[in-house]
Image (cartoon, rainbow over all chains, first blue to last red):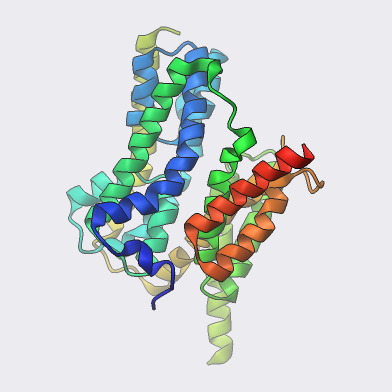
Length: 239
Length: 108
């Protein structure tokens, strides 16, 4: 199945294609990464630790939450526990990417897993769905995305509160808009639309109920179960 | 907190972040999964993306906001339509950002 406009993005040289596909991620990462750098500096982290967290942990929302907890002087064990809960959603993302990567060896998989973020997951699941499994593009997208994240944290640390506000340019909408495009491209049939609506509303309810750190993972598990349940039910009906 | 403690915390954060990212890929990629599991996993992308997106569009400071000045919500409507019609990733991001910026400039 070829989708016009999407197929174009994978033509040409692999690195060029990776650069094109990573552009929206970078646009979203630059302001968020810089915000992380500013907050890390204000929380009293050294430059080395600020950049190391972007190199070693590489998880946007968890890093922002962690520097807030460092600033509040909370104990390291609770920072680590919170990071675990906040990032547990990546378990589901990795699991859903796995069936596409049967031809990869364990080292490649372990390296690829290191850079599974919300954004890279979204881009790769769209690429895999259209059959684009090019390894150079996969690793190119991941490397460029993380590089932009690391650079942004570095700049944020130095610029501190003096970096200009990104709000007048609407750059803070880059990631939500990217999720809109990626979500639409996941809509293969009516049941996908139903699952998306169901999970999204459930996530809002869970947020409102105070389960904000668990909301994404719970809404995903219940939403996917709902979709699989409806699918097997309709199959039985049509037999 | 001294920088050494911060560093040790970061290493522990690395472990609890990397292990859930790595285990499913390394363990599941080489196996043939039963049909129901594959079907279940096929709904994960739609479910996880919307569980992150909906709260970003509809919640402000933890409460539901469907007021006119919630630009994140209203910019999403044309962005959804454009994404659906054109399948353009970049176009959707550009339109969304432009609408949010325009709202802030012209309406405030």
